[in-house]
Image 1 (spheres, rainbow, N blue to C red):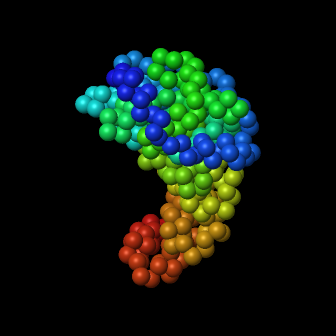
Image 2: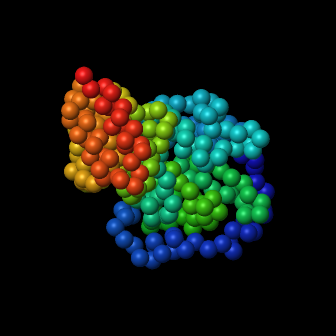
Image 3: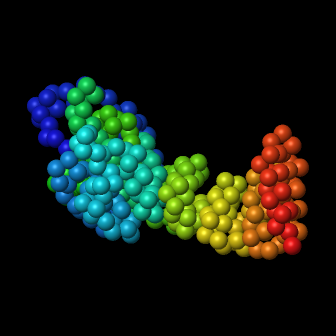
Length: 307
């Protein structure tokens, strides 16, 4: 993005607080004192292309090689001379990656310690005169109070952690971990990774979505939404046997879910198991007397398919 007025930047940064870094360094905790992610490629950004460059670095690191030029049509907005955050997330998911947001300093450093680089969104100037910028955080040293970035044309930009937080706070503490679907972020909670897996489904990456849901279930085996997501992903791929198995697992966790019974009915019918499919459809209708229209439609449809 556009170059900064350095004197203005230096004169104003001192007035900003760094509450998260201060608490982190004061309390210590279980973070390693130093960490650095190996193998993060470096693509020096071309003019205004910090977003495509940063995303290309983490995408390539994750096993999905791509150049910043290839990403420009997907994420760069010429009228803004920059890249919107939602477009970064969408582009990663369209290419089959699990994209999960990181939003505080401790989580950022924990991801780095776990071996995951993080795209960070900074305002390198002022709230009333912003200079937006994307970089990749891939290392830190708590003893020296430093963080290491791939930023702009700097292959290894070592910056003060307090100063970094000031710029990151002005970017709303927005960070993004981009991972293959068989790997979860170290700090992601169940809801955030479920949202990321659902994002893969919405972009038509059903195979990767199934992989992501399976990975989620390895960590949260009782997750009803993950079983439903896995089943739906299998169904979309026409793997009806695995879909039915996953729907049954969902029903084990939530036996009174009409949606699970309804979808199981379709998976069974697709395998020619019409009697079982009708029983499942009838159970969906029984469980949802206040909203039976959609489930009655299923029952009627499957009744018409019965040999």
